[in-house]
Amino acid sequence: LYPPDQIQCSDPYPPAREAASKKGYNVSESNSIVCTNAKDAVFLAVKPNCVMSACKDIAEAEQLDAVIVSIAAGVTLEALENAMPGKRIVRVMPNTPCLVGEA
Image (cartoon, rainbow, N blue to C red; front, side, top):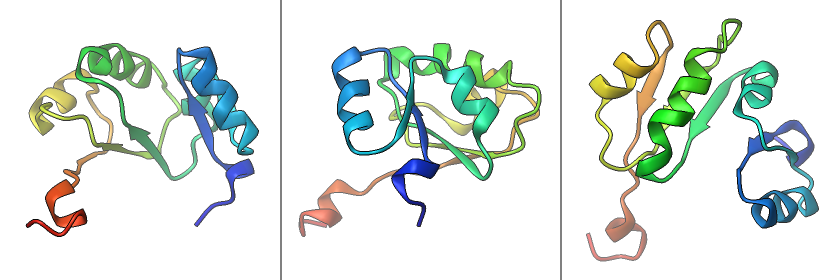
């Protein structure tokens, strides 16, 4: 596991950035800054209406070698690959019912 000071995150919502900053994370409004500093993985965890905008930012990050891990609901691996050609992408699906013991 990485300590918070080694994790980059971005969010367009100022209160969310402030909360993450208080926890010790390196926070930015810019996805490109996250991509520039990413070493191992970039987690794509956004609302469905924001996915393609975030994918565009990631696709434009030319020096990004990190794997992209998507937990974006309802977005297929094919759609992600089309939006971010040439990037290594993994799509994961959280299992909330299992988490709460109902699976």
